[in-house]
Length: 117
Length: 113
Image 1 (cartoon, helix red, strand yellow):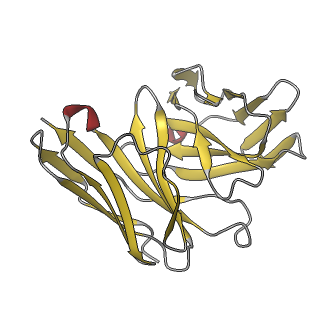
Image 2 (cartoon, chains in turn orange, brown):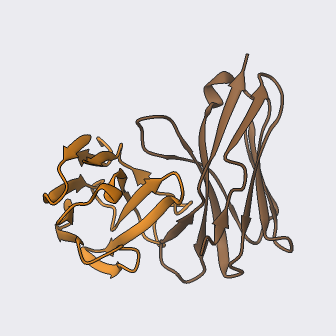
């Protein structure tokens, strides 16, 4: 398996523009997570899905952020409009549920470094 | 509210010595704890974990200790190697909380020659 695949790796955009981050989870994993990494807050959970259904989006900072998972192999995180304070590294991760796996560990993608100027 | 805290942003250790990374938590409902390692420009990777019913778990050079009464866990790396230089994240899961993990802010470990 190629692991969790995120695109793009880097994104530079102007304030006010729409940004879409993409994620392909590992086949067979039924959980998908979006995290944001900042120096101040570390890895911050934004939203997670179970079997393509959003379970907890309490970490989504504002209505400008939205996430979808139309099928088991694809998810998007959208920011519209983007602001400079959204600059961070965004990670997607996937995992088996509690009935699978032995350590409840996630597999992370390589992340998307977003810079909003 | 930071439920998982890593109060040392950085740690420097000499090669061959022990590295001790610390993590404190506030939520008594956490029942499973994990450590992840992250290299630059890569995603975090799972390192080692421990259930709340245990106080120690060992895997090669890595040992995690859990002190539930103090709400504290630590990761020991012995001996430390230059390749261990990375950011280490502590994470925790709430019992019955699905597969959601709460992460700390990370500690940058530098192992010097």
